[in-house]
Length: 370
Image 1 (cartoon, rainbow, N blue to C red):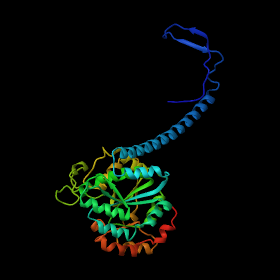
Image 2 (image 1 turned 180 degrees about the vertical axis):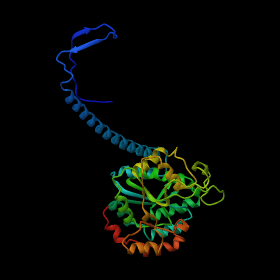
Image 3 (image 1 turned 180 degrees about the horizontal axis):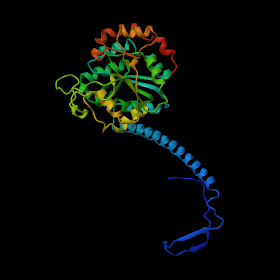
Image 4 (image 1 turned 45 degrees about the vertical axis):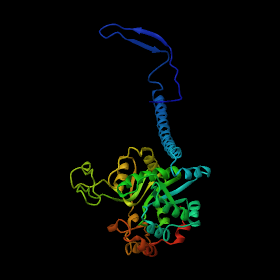
């Protein structure tokens, strides 16, 4: 379709001649003063120019509509949380009362009820506490929360409430806790986070992984201009069909013949997605399929989208000496863990040593400009 603001006056037909003979009868309209050879080139150039302008306008309109759809979806998610009486509604009201601001990233640390020692070890190392955490939010635009579910009453909930009262660093979700529920928990986290905070990136990290926040922020900031980004250590492991083994995939048959590998996806210890992808999850959370493994599920949600997969190996360094050697060479790691344990082995005891030998230093965070 071609839209233009130009109009051409159609001359009235002056002479109408009718011919008969072997050919079918037809009308020949001869407009006054209209020579098809005159002005044809000029009109052609004008039309091409209008087509080019129209095409550019359509592209601009498409981008505007896409942005409005994303903002509308985030607003709906926030409204749904308030109307349903979700536990995050209090935070949402607080957010609405405050001036809306843009954050660089939201870091959600996946944790469980039984992981109190892991949380304390993270608080004692790479996660700022108290006024420093507030300063991190206000000055650097970085939100950090432990992501945990509501247990619907009981001693476990009371313990978490007491811990939250002391530290104030939890994001609580209405969800069922458990390893086989991690895919659903991941959907709930991104849906809640994108409703609460307007950020460029949303990060998920496990509570037994060491993170250098400044290095992570600098890494993500380089991709700010890209609308749909999925960043992590990309892998393609085997699809395990045998029952009873760890990471067994009940739907193995969907991935082809036995022995095939998964599509490329980010390893689950730490990954980041841009706002558009987090909003996409929020909009489509009820129809996104969940596989047995959370990292596979997330990768499957993006495999058919126009999203850029970025493989950054600094997000999956090993513990010392690996991350230590890299730091000494000036290539500080974003995250460190042991592949054999899918996290730092005995992290509650060892993460302090990892932090001492591989940490970027506290000054790196406060002097960073993202």
